[in-house]
Length: 500
Image (cartoon, rainbow, N blue to C red):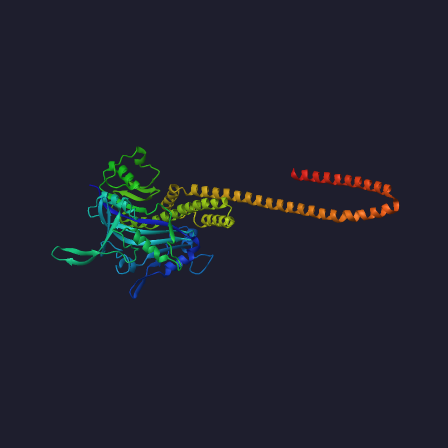
């Protein structure tokens, strides 16, 4: 009978935030405290990721300080929840180990499954992307794969969708007669709770922990959803023993699609192929699994060897998970940029005076991402690099980047043509103003010049006679008219040449 020998996962909630607050945000998380009466403890500890497998320039990006601002500011901040907050029911979660004093239970339509929170990590990127990841291990006493599939399928919906809720209880004593623990209701003090709720949801814990990053003066939620609202992106592992080989394709399909145990499975043949594009082979009967909803690793009858029993699970939850986080960041930075392209385009269409600063910010963000986040290679080793490439393929990172880049180029062309038209309109307005001024000056000259011209003729009439004066006047008008006609024709020629 098929049984589980290892099953756990990291459930990721990705979010976006104002990139301008990155520096103040990391400073706030650095100083955040859990306070109980007169006692307090740090909520988060800054951790440095091991650069053993990373390429040097990627390690510098992840672990080195920002050259822009100096001080204690980083391009990527990786935090881990402090042991006090993780393990203490007084301060925080009361978990951190298997079968701890606090029992968390997933409640869904398929029943109830207890689980433990082994760790919590927080990732903040200077690109304005963040993720909080909960390392979860369900308690599966029957070692039944169906229990795992139910847990994986339903725990994703942390916001209460599909009737999912969680129950928490704390061991407060021991009943010797019944030989069992005595439990009392409990909910983490750090959670953001609402008094009018009939049931508890995991979202309250997520939001409570993220509230520790509120910067002074903020009154609204400082982050926004970037994935499906109220849904995790899981990265998990499942090791099975005593598997009927004929069941492997359908089990891989069920794991990749995260389908619960009672789901009627009638997939087309292409979906159950072990050469599916959402799979990458590791060793015999072991695959990395990829989808837009998350992924992980599944193993059937692994060898009884220390590497497969101990080291590989550690690598999966460490190096391979970091690859997952990095590609999530790439995916959603580009998604955010695509959304901002639409916003900037709409702003351009209504002729907002802030259009060029908005576009400059968009363009500089894409350039920063291209140099600080969009790597073709991040890991030194073959297996890690191949998995990184596969995640980029599944998330269509290259296509997203090209699409956003082309859209920004289109906006650039539009703004340039718009700016050219504005300059042309300004030049035309200046020309029109100059012509109006010339006409006004001419009128003034006529008003002043005609009397000045007539005075000599009046004097001539008195001395030379009317006939002689009239002939001179008529001759002057004819000569002046011919000169005026000549000047007008020359101006017309110049205008025609200029228009051509």
